[in-house]
Length: 364
Image 1 (cartoon, rainbow, N blue to C red):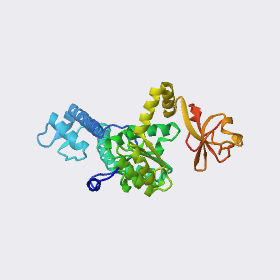
Image 2 (image 1 turned 45 degrees about the horizontal axis):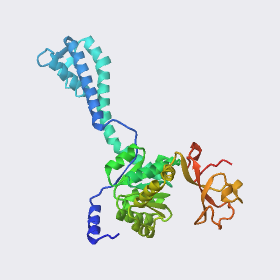
Image 3 (image 1 turned 180 degrees about the horizontal axis):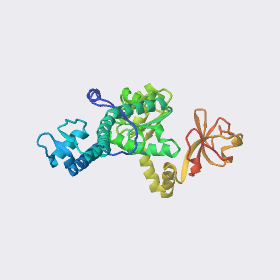
Image 4 (image 1 turned 60 degrees about the horizontal axis):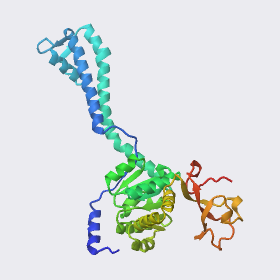
């Protein structure tokens, strides 16, 4: 894979055009236009009710211009009264009209002002509340998972990690598409709109404090640039990348990826396996789907298993992770299990196995 000089220049030019911002998940609320329309309708209803009340008692009012009060005068009086303008050209003169103003019109005036002023204050304070939520979110976000790309691969990756018990609050989605981030927010995930190849975008996702970063972009060259940027910001995070072409996998490893998944090759091998043995293909597909049927998990060795061979463990052990080496269950270098080992096992998916990757309760 090569990046031409023209592609690099075009990418740099596009960077200045891309805006990035953080979008936090929020409760489903009415559209702002619908909210304003509803409040204006309530204000107009109060205006009409007040005008009808005044018109019904029109004999108790006096108009300084012509001495009589018609329906238009009633609406005019209701308007200037509810808006607290009060020109004084129309005034209540009877005791009944004055009592009506005290006990009916005045409460309607207060309700009218609450509706209009409340709408204005809500519009003014919305940005402040959003900034407060954003600052609080940033201050509490630690050891989270960043998923770059909310396409088919990214959604499947999120579904898998959440099936192990990872809370939605610990997942941050990064995608240049505002529609993708809207969908992520609707699912309960925080999102950052922007190009993840830029360090500013990953910083908004708090990449330097992330525990793991999943890169599932549409293009392999983009995946390389995102991996380089992410590794530069966070030296200790676990970075897993999906690429289309197998020939690009070594380049991703050199760029700082801990694991590289070749989607095209993996799908091809699964297709071939399903042709040769449909049953084996079904088992592999079952293992891929987290949370149902058979699951492959990584867990620590418990005290009761120390000194035993992998074959003597209750679970079906596939591999043993010792230090930085992954040994097969039948590898002669395994010998007996040690307390510092970790086991990769195949288990039946139950509610007890859907736990966080770092804390896996076991049944002794």
